[in-house]
Length: 232
Image (cartoon, rainbow, N blue to C red; front, side, top):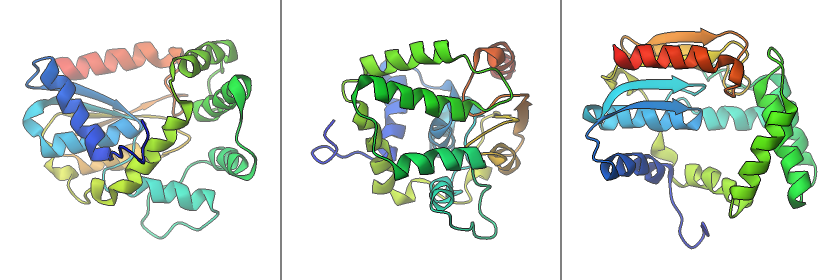
């Protein structure tokens, strides 16, 4: 989409989740949400509790925690105010500072290499990084994208609705909630515990070795946990 011609907000993306459910005739569903999707899932659970059977939040930040500002301050080398969320790990900061300092990648090869490098940073160092599998994935992502630059639109959407993340509302979540975080989370370390503490009855699950991505080594553990949670 041309964002200038047809701007959208994170609230629009959140509403799209409900529209997909409507299109499938689903009055309610189990929401399993990763990263930024976790913010959408938390907000839906607050605004539309009757539509969320269970909530699973993976590698995300607490609604209203100002995660975007925390990451931006880290990239700009600014100190985090007292009481703010924990910032990303140094390797994450160094990687994105390097991207900001240099020219953007151009062409299919450079862009795919940059995407693999990003995936490697988010993956972490505790588990082996399968570069061949990462390359196959990023090649598919790049080749399927009609406009790879459109990813920037999501950042613009976040800025278009600064009040998207209401503060102090997670105690309103009624859905049984499972919060999952990797022990080697790169972007949002420690945020899972904050979410789990804020939502009544939520359970925190730490996955050994997992970073911010979901590598094959943890698929079985994640699947078992989510199936148990949604069947309760």
